[in-house]
Image (cartoon, rainbow, N blue to C red):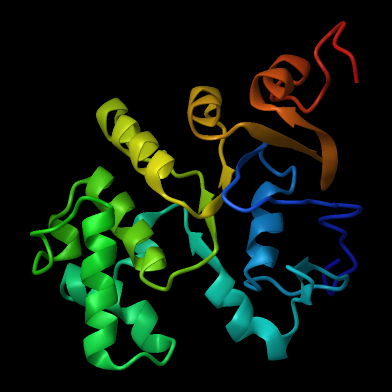
Amino acid sequence: TYENGAQALHGVDFDLLEGESVALLGANGSGKTTFVLHLNGLLNGQGSIEIAGMPITPDNLPAIRRKVGMVFQDADEQLFMPTLLEDVAYGPANLGFPPEEAVHKAIHALESVGLSGLERRAPYQLSAGEKRRAAIAGVLAMEPEILILDEPTTYLDPPAQRELIQLLSQLPQAKVIVTHDASFALATARRAVFFRNGTIGGTGPVDEILTRFDWTLQPRSGAAR
């Protein structure tokens, strides 16, 4: 609930297993992005949210943000340093790691997303697919347990989407993927949570949820609730 009294989310109970990938589905305005921004403490409001039994409070935000990494819909929002290496090292440095260790973590993260050799490249020189992987590397360098991706296929052509699917399949972190792309959800997640008007309208295997619901937030005709 926001300060103006608007209730964006209510009654949302969400469990995520270690290493699990879950797709969040639903129409625009259904609460998906609002929910994940709360998971990382990026939005304030009344109500309570816990991560691994830890309530999201101002005092707990540093610990929460070590556990939960957020990849935004627009990769350019996360790429702002002169070079890719500096960009990816920024996160661990901001967490208090010494400069040499931050750089080491950045190099390892760039290797993990297939961007080795581009450390001195300026972010604006990257393709859309490379920018997406660079944004993911910037989060991975902080070694989170949970990776949140908000509409990760935005601006990506089919080859870049296939590269992203392969990359996500190789990452050990638990993943929460906000997407409108049914094929991407099927390729990257085994379970889906369907949001409707700020609450969970259904949860289950991705193919089952895609069969039960359409993007108008209504159960499909004849589908079991």
